[in-house]
Length: 579
Ligand code: ADP
Ligand code: MG
Image (cartoon, protein in one colour):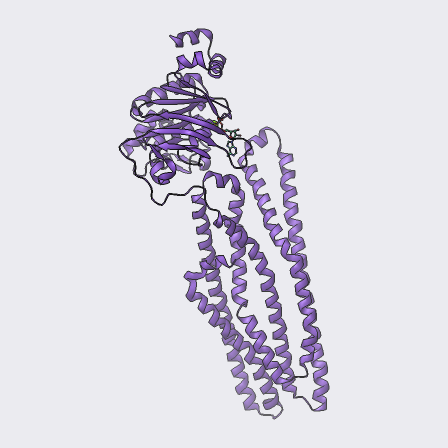
């Protein structure tokens, strides 16, 4: 929480306003009982109507001033709190942009969303409350006690007697409620996780008729959150009546003992009233201090979760002195690379060494889970290697800035992702200032123009959020066009062609050939037909290279490859390809 207070900095002036207004409010509150006591002792007791009027009007003015201070105070406090959380949210978002995929594997997306929305809102609410109370309550408490003692010392025994009960109740609630706040956020995370998974997988859930099951899962999580919230609120709802009871008891006691002394003539009736007012204000400020103490842990729980994200040191950061590339363009080299996912038992890649040269097509083939995607994800440095090195243009990727590295690469990921916006907007992801001509060319090569022409608004047709209004193959082709438009040095196609029918696949690769003539091309594939004429085929099995070479040689030397081929092609096709 303390660390997050740095986001208050830009709000220095509103903050000062809040403090000054709070002081004004306290002065008004503390001044009123004195005026009242004056009216009783100097006005009513002496039948001085003019004095009563004068002081009465003065009291109205002071009250009015207090109200104005309170309203403005809340206004500025809200401004500070809202502004502060805006900055926190922005900082969180910026931080998450720096995450490598490793960090996304660690903190779930659902949790990141709760932290950016719910947790910041918690902080905001608590900040408003704290800002309103943290000045007024202590001033009222301290000055109130002094002024009360000034009116009468003996009645103070009532306060002294009541305080232990008050503090006891507060401490009890504090101990009970605080752990629940932390628990609450965790449960909310879980709820969000289930909701997120549900919405993402809605098609699968319906297809497999798992609606009932998912409903129950959500209900369970929902009930947990609800029950916890009820417990927390029950605890807090006990506080108000108990406090009120204690306050009324003390009023009663003050009037009781006070009136005995008034009757005996040892106490002014005015002083008694003033004391009563001070006592109420003192007890109220103890209550407010308690509220602050109860809400701070709530904010603390949220602040901790926010700070956790802020404290994550992204695995991958830019080097201080990045190396500039030389003349070489598009050279990719793996030098004895071993890589494991966070928490995985065995490495996903082991001792991978190969060179992918410009102007050449390097194909990577292997069963699912053999590490093909993992391998290509190391090139744009989505993850860092465990040992060995990935070199692009003969420079270790860890020694370049991520921007410089990724600028060289046109990646078509295995799972095509499009963003809400027009087709053109999506293509401009590849190149910001792409001209219409460039875009047209890119979609033609990617074999996407045919279906785009059929869309009502052609290139300006809108892609729905998540790309739900285009088919898998269409999405894949647009995602290829997005990479092509960059004219990168290195093309990486991660299983891009398997979503396409054989004919489109062949046509696309034909068209690509001239486009990627001078570039380095890495194609990950499952289909033999996609890799068969590559300049170099790398065969992966359980994270290791079990064969590397051209089709003809691999057929003889690599059993894994020969098996894959014979499972996909007929003997006559194999014979044809081998000549
Ligand atoms: P392929 O693309 O060849 O199908 P992947 O490279 O996606 O295979 O996966 C290789 C292995 O790494 C698999 O065993 C998979 O379970 C594991 N793996 C992939 N992604 C992750 C991840 N984000 N976290 C942990 N393990 C992963
Ligand atoms: Mg894959």
